[in-house]
Image 1 (cartoon, rainbow, N blue to C red):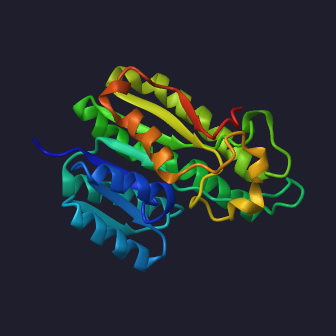
Image 2 (image 1 turned 180 degrees about the vertical axis):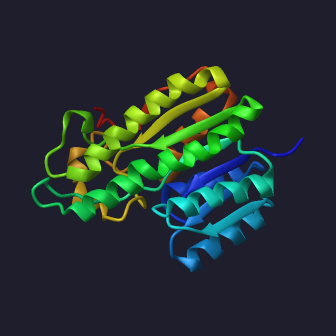
Length: 244
C-alpha cells in the first residue's frame, strides 16, 4: 500500500513546515511550493529525506495560477494521487480600508483566497476519482473577522471569505468522500510575516502565551485523521481562549 500524499503550500517555514515534518515522521509523502527562499527549501528537502519521506519541493509563487496548475499536474505525475491538501500560505497586510492600495488588496485576495480556490479546483478531480480527500484551509481566530475588524482591512475580509469558501466546499464535496475544514490559529510563535509582539500583546491572550507551531499542526492533523471522517465544514480555533 502506497503512503498517503499531502500537498501543503508554503511548507518551508512556520505552520506549513511543522505540518510537513509531523506528517513525514509517520511516512506521509509531501509536496510543496515555495516562492523564493532556496535555502529554506533545501533545508526542508533534507529534513524530509532524513525522515525517509518521499517529497516534491518546487519553486512557484502561489499568485502564479498557471504555475499552481502545473504544480498539481507534477504532483499527480510523481505520486499518482493526493490524499491531503493543506492551503497554508497567507499574507499579512494590516491596514484600514482607506489606507490600503488596490494592488495590496488584490495581492491579499490572490494569496489568501484565490490561490486556495485555484489549487483546490485542480486537486478535487484527483480526490473524487478515489472517493477520498481531506482539505484544510488556514484561517485566523485572533479576531472575529466575519463581523469586521478595524485596522485589519484586506487580511480580515479575505480570511472571512476563505471561511465561507471552506463551508461551501464542505457541503458540495462530502458526497464524494471529501471533507473540508479550517484550522484558525491565534497568535502563534514562528508564524506569519509580522512579529507577533507588534500585533497582539500577551496580556490580550487568556492563556498567557502564544500558540506553538506544533499545537496548530496537531489540530490540522486531527482533521486529516480517520477520527474526523464525519467532520466537515468546521472551523477549529487554536487561540488560547481568544475565541470569536
